[in-house]
Image 1 (tube, rainbow, N blue to C red):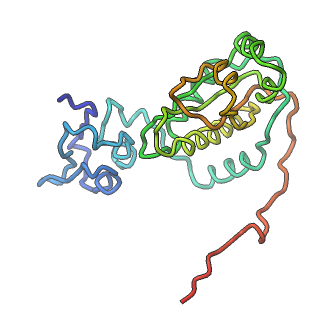
Image 2 (cartoon, helix red, strand yellow):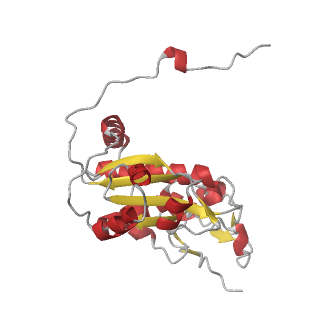
Image 3 (cartoon, one colour):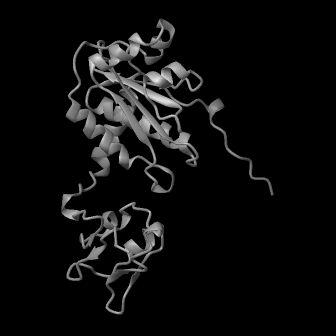
Length: 251
């Protein structure tokens, strides 16, 4: 069999720290007698989760996998920088239902969708697929095939992203909703407005209009575009004590 993972270690960089061994969910890695990382059973591809954790955790950038060069990866931002930006992004995101008649750059949309491959998903199966409507003529054609009540389901958004998965995929709904939540935050980080909408699973006309594969399942969709009404500040919310529950540890 061909080694699809193409796992490689630069022994001049590897320091034998064993971080890669500890994070590998498939338990495929070990240190040889010279304390260099090696991989067990390179032909057993089903045991590799394709998570690339080994590439990401190596402090020296000694590991390549799937032809990915560690020099092409990004380094984490500092905790101080990340925490304030992410906190503010979450606090200022809002659901948008009014949009400008302005095209969203297809290359930006494609980049955001690629980033969703980093969203948490069950056993890193990467089973979520996406149906994208990002042109006005596409949306018009779809709306023309639906009645006004069905058209209102899209939240007046000019663009639409629908995560869906092959039927039978374990935790598919979880993976789809997680992808939707990540995509909404990615939209907010670029100044795009978005709204997460439950997918009308029992509406065959909407299903057909969006050309979702018949053997797939979906539970959510995201309308997005340039917002007509910007927000100037965050709202002020907190989880009240009545919404916070702690188990009682009884002896």
